[in-house]
Image (cartoon, rainbow, N blue to C red; front, side):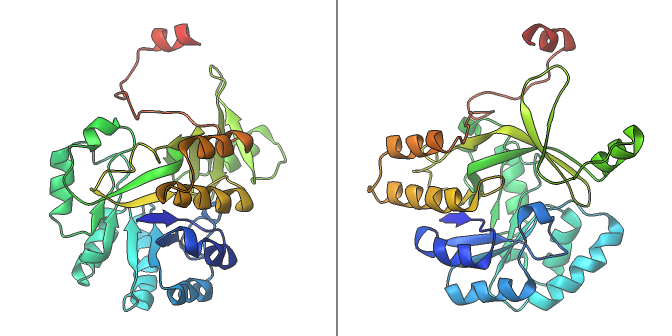
Amino acid sequence: MIITSPKNYDQAVALKSYCDGYLVGINDYTPQFLSPFSYEDFLKLLDLKQVVILRLDLLLQERDIAKYKILIEKVKLLEIYYYITDLGLLNYLQKLGLIAKVIYDPFTMITNKMDAKTYYELGVDAIAPSLEIPYRDVLSFTEPLFYLGFGRRLMFNSKRKLLSLYKEEKQLDFSLKDLTIVEEKRTDILPIFEDGGTFIYRSYFVNNLFLTKDNPQIKYLLIDSLTIPEGVYTTLCQYYWQYLNAEKTPKDLENYLKTNHLLTADGFTYQDSIYQKEEIINEKN
């Protein structure tokens, strides 16, 4: 099942022929850089007869839970699924009898088949393995999975507003939109966002579309639109849909990525993530 993340309702309509469903947040409950919809446009998605997944993939503080409970009370009778990260929110949905509609993605927590089994036995619809483990480990999972087919990996997340703190400390004046950072000892250009906290993404896109094509355990394969221009993203989804239906070749898709400067890398797809000593990192840089 191909899941897309349209930036607005009109794009959702344009994507309808090239996906099985949508991952979409709602204003005031999802950071703005993830392109949430108004509540009215979110409801309109249901008329498109696609799978609709409400994006709530945030780690919440205790004082925030009440706000999200109000939203869930509004939507709990709708035919939607819930993509969540916070365990407290999962417990609340379980109490409401909605656990079977939960796609649980605790970011880096599900790293082996025992983790997957434990979380899935809570009664959720699907679980999301950590993106920091190699794909060969994912192949050992027997539970329905939510997996990133194409998009950026979140590298860092903090509740602190680090960009605003930096502006204040250095007495600078700059917009908080469309920013990137470069670490002192590295050359990677990292997208950074501030909205209810700080989010830093890796410098490249991960392309798992060919790798995951024939994995029957992947129930939801996400093509994520973050930092991809709207027109480029719509065509990307079209290309992949046509590839699945033998109308495009892998080379066609690779050429499209190259033409539109969508830099891809394997990340941890083929290698274990490990801690490296500082002298090894310095030597590489």
